[in-house]
Image 1 (cartoon, protein in one colour):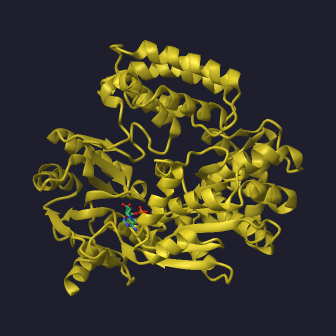
Image 2 (image 1 turned 90 degrees about the vertical axis):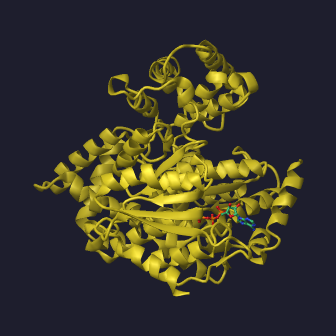
Length: 593
Ligand SMILES: Nc1ncnc2c1ncn2[C@@H]1O[C@H](COP(=O)(O)OP(=O)(O)OP(=O)(O)O)[C@@H](O)[C@H]1O
């Protein structure tokens, strides 16, 4: 099908929903507000495809910013189905990668912002050392420097514009701490992660020509998950879109904001909708879940919303599983009763997810599933292949190619090569560089075909033969090259963690396996059945949440995110007679009508 046919079909799919259709055809600033499963991302990707095809003339393009790499990879996958690949006409990435690759890297040399020509990104250890040195020179107190840095870092992310009175007016001691810290880094030619949007903001604000250059390249800016993006992105949007002529298309849901600890503020999204120059469109239909699940989710949120199921959609089911004891017994119950119950009803392993608050809880579920012989894949921070890492996914794809993929081009070598090239050089690569890379890669991959190596030894070779030489040459400063070393220790044979290479290939996708995920990593995803693990009184909310009103609200929203992931069935697992008060509210809400 040609790309214009694909686009027509995508627009046609939304025709029955007038709000989605209106948003897709919008040509002014537009904010789409909607609940879970309402098709926000589908609307955004369709609007992006239409804009590229009809409103923006080649070589101009559009930029699409989202919260983290995982969301960016998900968006790329969805956009690929509409015939859009990241490249010169479409930037798809995080606010940090936008700041670095579209503002700092091309223009820092042309302005006086105090950055060295060859800047590098500080490692965690370098950033920690800079905090300690800055504390010593600026504060000279007797407390743990990192505790105090927590407050400084919060201020740094919140007070983006340092020319405003609140920068010096609110807590000047922290200002000195921040300035000393940044001086420490700059002295070594370094910037840190939080520097990226801050520096980009300053460069754009102080140099109107940079704003114009960005507008010339990207006359339209798309933002997904706006509620999670925080002050730096918001200030960039105000500058670029309402002060620089770029058109804004943003989607979000303040109820799903679960990153306030990292500087997000759901009120920023709301503030956009108050502007007279922004068209706000609300979507009401939930295409994911039936009426019963929607009611349950409103009980989980503790608020009323006008969300409706699509006519004729099955109601969905909810079941409550009380285990006699604590977390271990609940994990056993999942392995021996809840999953077998779902399987007996015809749900496939790959369509089941177990969700929990923190990765250490995932260890308990993983252990119980291992004992019961249930195949699973972790997508939390203990995942062997991190869904948020392009390098990890590339390594996994190479394993798939070497263990049979070479035979039927799944994945094709050309895709591996372009992944490697993007990892190494970003979007600009010379023919000579591409040739050298291609030779290195094929040599390594061919020698892997039919090799008896286990994952551990194969990864060690990958690290030695590819990562080490690439790391020395890479122009792309964003990659976390340590990911490969992390995977090597994650397959340590002395800890019984090693596995055959064929089994390793395909670890990030859940085909045939139950997904184990934190609530944060489950954001934006959907499954037929979702098991929420450990929804106990004392855990949901826990002691820390109860300390502040903000903490309580954030915890409740993360509970809501979990409850809104299933298409068909939600299973809540807790300690008998000790369930979370929110489970009770959820139950009461489903009984009310
Ligand atoms: N108009 C539509 N007709 C049919 N299906 C739709 C429509 N819009 C969205 N969907 C489907 O609904 C599901 C949810 O869509 P999507 O992921 O875009 O929602 P979302 O609002 O971004 O969800 P969330 O905020 O929960 O992540 C997807 O399976 C999508 O294909």
